[in-house]
Length: 189
Image 1 (cartoon, helix red, strand yellow):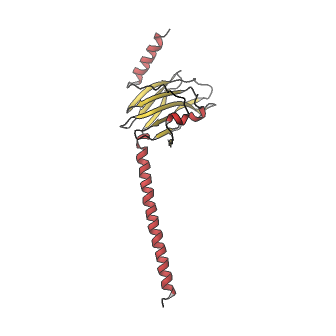
Image 2 (spheres, one colour; image 1 turned 90 degrees about the vertical axis):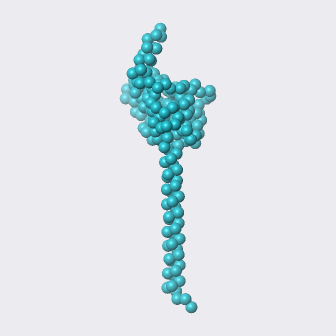
Image 3 (cartoon, helix red, strand yellow; image 1 turned 180 degrees about the horizontal axis):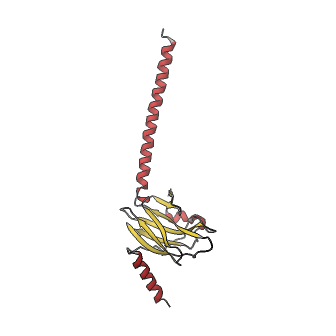
C-alpha cells in the first residue's frame, strides 16, 4: 500500500505544475495580444491635429500624418477644452458646425481652415480627430490626446448625414497657407 504523504506530495506537485503551465500560457497569450494591439496602433499613434490660430474665424489647424501610409475619412472637430461648449464631437452631435472633412490624409503635415465660432470669455478650443487607418481600423483622438479604437467608420461614429463634402489637403508651409488664405480674403468684396 502507498503511504498518504507520498500521494499528497504527488497530487500537490501536479497541481502546482499545472498552475505554472497555465500561468505561462496566459502570459504568452497576453504578450501576443499586447503585441498585436501595439501593431494595430502603430499608424494611428502617428496621426494628430492641433489648432495653429484658434482665434481666427475660420480657425487655422495643422494636421500631421507622421506614418508612411495615408489615413482615410479624416474628420476634424473643434471642441472645447474649457468653457461652456461641446467637449467631444459626439457631444456636439451630427449638426455640430465646427468640422472639416478630409477624404485622404497622405503622409506629411498640412494646414487647413475649420469653421469656428471664435472665443468667448474663458472658452478654449482644441481639435478632436477621427479617422480610418490604412488597415481599415477606425480611431478617435480626443482633444486632450487620448487615442481610442472605435467600432464604426468616422462618418457613422458621429452619425453624420451623407453625402460628405470631402476635401483633400495640399502640402505647404504655414506662411504659404496664411498668405494664400489672406490673399483670397482680400479678393472677396
